[in-house]
Length: 183
Image (cartoon, rainbow, N blue to C red; front, side, top):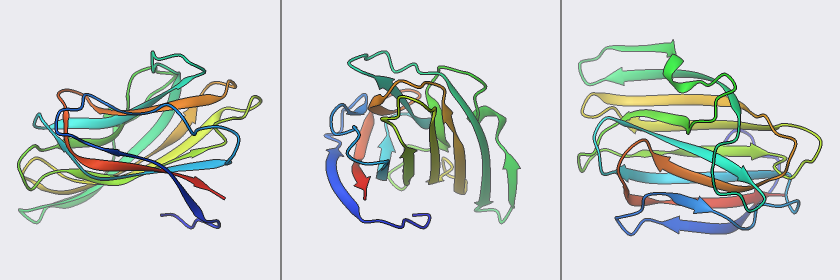
């Protein structure tokens, strides 16, 4: 998971019941840890050819619309043996408040899902913006393997206390997301 120097402390686990609109972590994100890791495993969408993403909020706010600036690229290898790497303009934001895309074109067939991780750095800082990195692997709705890399910052100096994951449409119909504090 990208060269962690410390130990992972399990804090919380979301397990889909097959009809979840969101996976939301509303407690445990505080000054106890300088870094938080979210590992998502086999997150299966209801709808086909959609994106998976996250957004955050502060205090007891539940709008999940913090300002994000991010960068995005992806690599792929399709079943027809075409492969490549490219900047993903649809995966980045420039001072946007939308859901931060962390994986694209996820299919909803039984053999399609998304897995990966999101790292959130210093979410409790009252001085600095909050940096993040994400890496995901998904099956491109019946086309092949698709790996995305997203990184950026949440442009607030207010402490982040909530993280929410969801698809751009439909429900989360399977999978787990684990939240860890890194010592």
